[in-house]
Image (tube, rainbow, N blue to C red; front, side, top):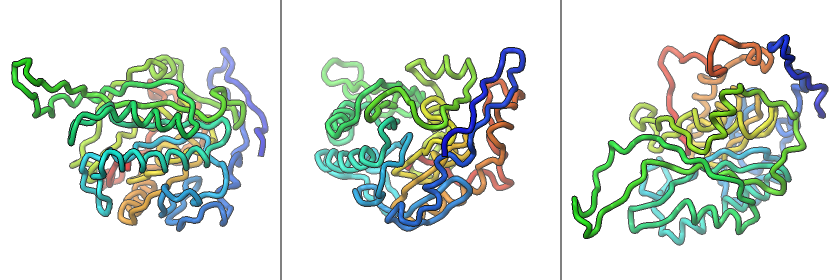
Amino acid sequence: MVVTSVKKPSRKNPKSRIRYSPRFNVGILHDSGFCRGKEYFRHKDVILYEGDSLNEYLFNREFIDLTVTSPPYNVGIQYNSHKDELSYEGYLEFSEKWIRNCYQWTKSHGRLILNIPLDKNKGGQRSVGADLTTIAQKVGWKYHSTIIWNEGNISRRTAWGSWMSAAAPFVIAPVELIVILYKDSWKKITGSKVSYISRQEFMDWTNGVWTFNGESAKRVCHPAPFPRELPHRAIKLFSFVRDVVFDPFCGSGTTLIEAANLNRIGVGVEIDKHYCEIAKNRILNETGTLTFEEETDNTKRPDNRVFPKKSQSGYTASGNR
């Protein structure tokens, strides 16, 4: 369904509501043949499939407006049922498969926000960020820019190489990359065309260095934590209201939570049933009930963010995969 109307807030009345069709893009939520994976869970505008993003036939159409994901890093992390320790060549082949599939499932004006390491030291020095960006361009994605995420974890450092000697020192950067890619055209001319983002958010987030903490694996009970701040920023900055936001490595559901709370349609794929259940519980506990208009009118928080309250037991988990 097309947008019914878009009314920009006036200077005299900054709280004036922006109207749009609440059923925009809702068709995929009711198409039983949309995905060949097992539908594990759905809640309002969120669907989670138990399936494998390496399967090129998993989805039967172009449906993605924005993918926000952080794939396995191949650094030996112990997942529930996945071995995160391929040869580097095998890892690149794995990456090419899922990146190509996402390209095939993405709409013409769709985008891919890819959170990946700058480099890899375990098992030899590898320029992971450069290699995966090259692979993405090889399969058809166009490069737009890169955001440096400074997560400030240099205090965890234990390896120095040749201590205080030029013989063989190790250089470690406490940052990760957020690579921004698009399919055919960078300018979005489809969708609701409704954005809601504060002036300060837009100014801060279009700066190519983002600084916020990572997540504690112990606290969130997931081996590869993915802070909610990252998809929160990416979704608000790079998608319209009611766009379809996708995560091919859904893990504990962080991207879907932010998609739901920002009034997008969230579609996720997770191969591990254990993490599907964690994602289900988190989505139920951490997604709010505010409408878009209610959030637009919310002026109580200076950063214009609206998060749901924690349950009495706290958040169950958080992760990027």
